[in-house]
Image 1 (cartoon, rainbow, N blue to C red):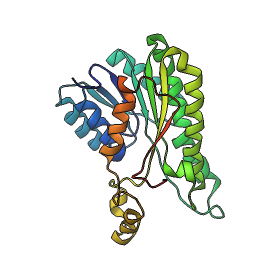
Image 2 (tube, one colour; image 1 turned 90 degrees about the vertical axis):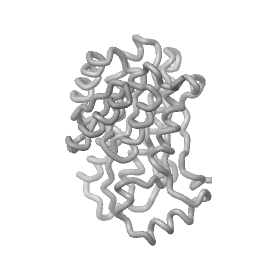
Image 3 (spheres, helix red, strand yellow; image 1 turned 30 degrees about the vertical axis):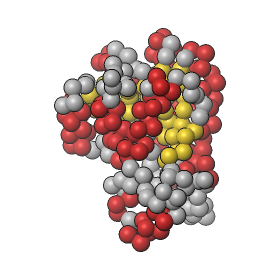
Image 4 (cartoon, rainbow, N blue to C red; image 1 turned 180 degrees about the vertical axis):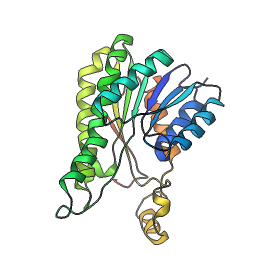
Amino acid sequence: MKLLEGKTAIITGASRGIGKGIAQVFAQQGANVAFTYSSSVEAANELENELNALGIKAKGYKSNAADFKEAQELADAVVAEFGTIDILVNNAGITKDNLLMRITEEDFDKVIEVNLKSVFNMTKAVQRTMLKQRSGSIINMSSVVGVKGNAGQTNYAASKAGIIGFSKSVALELGSRNIRSNVIAPGFIETEMTAKLDEATVKGWRDGIPLKRGGTPEDIANVCVFLASDMSSYITGQTIHVDGGMLT
């Protein structure tokens, strides 16, 4: 029995990295997948074909979760196409790192808008459908940085910490309707982005992690499957650290 059989998930920012890993594992577990991407049409088409080949229904949407109206239109389109929205994974995110003395107002605002406001936009957009169904699982991607902070990332840390407060409040508001809201805080996850870093930096990070390795997108995806499935039906308002013991 597949854990997400017959469920429909929206995953934002899924054409690469962690989002792509989540989409792949969700499809393997029987979920129908609606995913968003911002610019990489080719990667999105490739992923759509790959997921459909697994025997589920998958569709990519070019949509900016940071835009309130686009988020609403996306939710409407997914309901029209798939019939339900059972799972929302808010994964879209960017970084614009700099020391506080050098960071521009624009770079602060942009990171808050893409990382935090998108979570508000998408959660509000799917809320009506989930309330009608009296069920739903919302999974928001924070970061180890949102929990402990990081020099040079005031904007990113603020956005990721904000996600945790937002998610807890949603859990309190919607719990009586059987809608759950949880957070995953990834540590050092090795993706296309980290592959560009020099080996010495990456080795330093790995050495500082109790499990002595970086995480994979699949490590995050597996926890998402748990939170999206009925196995976690009594879990809401929680932040799960998937960081190899980094914050222990």
